[in-house]
Length: 508
Image (cartoon, rainbow, N blue to C red; front, side, top):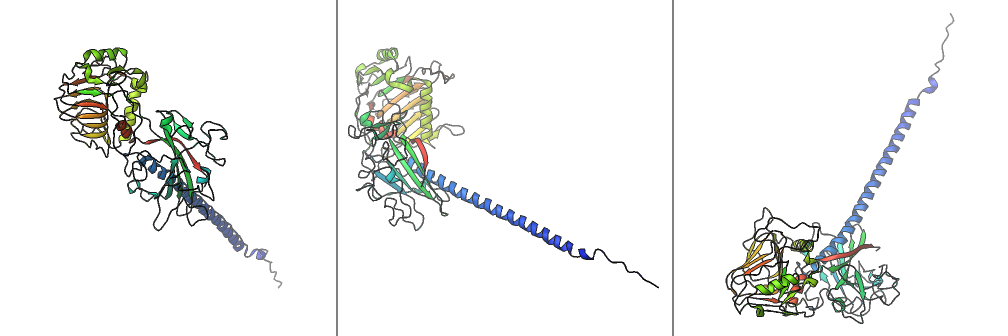
């Protein structure tokens, strides 16, 4: 018997499935490895970006702390401290001169921060930007160019965790300070003209350069000019990210007060005023304020300032003792040309809003907060900005800026140093003949169109409308006085925050 055996044709394919499985496993593994690498890369990129952003915002945080501490009324204020003389708030000398630069340092535990040392010296965080701002020799300016000792961070401003900014440099700004400076000159020129190196001032609208030879400072060039300061900050994180930012700042300009008592509005109501010869309103500048704040040049003003010629005439016919009101150019005078933005409801509203922002937590009367029976009215050594949005009864003493949007009633012995602004109802009532003196200025403006004492129709914004009828009823004179004092007005203005004129990031 013949038997035939068939050949298995698939014998040669044995093991192919294993090879395919291994190849697929390798392919999947490669894809997974790629995904893991991409994920790690994205994580690292995100971490680096976050670290860089931490450094960037930390540097801005350092500048913001210092910007706020330039105010005389700020916590741990840099103004009026032992670091500055009475006229150097902040430092007055130009950078490069003696004590022209102030450093505020923020060392971590175990760190020593000395940014004023030259490159190559044993310092971890050198100020590599300073030689782009002033002329240097061997990596630093010559002489005693920085204030010693350096100021320190304030724990009152510290975040949690503490921000890793290392130092902030404060100095007066100069125009196109050097050929290597990246700053654009304020006059738009190449910086090679005669204004290079001049002090920079703020005129309320833009920066201007003034001659260092002709003028000792911004106020000497114009009583409306304010100095511009340059704040530069370096932040370095624990991972090594470094960012440097810079601000140009100037103090918020406060409108001038053109009188000891100012009736800002047509048809003023001052029919009730003292017959007592002991009562007086003087626009002759007393020119004395708290020590350490500096004073502008003395400037006399009228005792009573009127809104326009007609309202000034009306004031003159209402007062019982015209001789009790003294000043320059007269005891009672038309100051319409000096009211500026305060001659309109828009300007008055902007002023109240600015002061309210500067007052911070000292704003009262907003729902659900009631009007206060007592509040911290400030002292000569520590003036306070208070805003009462409603009626308020005041007996003094106090110092600073007091804004009342309702009716302000004086009782007892109302003594105050600074500015009292009754802007809203524009109604001031004085009861009794108690003593007391206001050194500074009293400003009254009504933002309603009704005839007082009805206040139901606010004058709309946007039309640059004049304010309504201001009212002052002064019952009894006593020996109360209102005395214009430019030094006290200047002192409380220093409680305002410094405005940001420009900001930039620097390559470090």
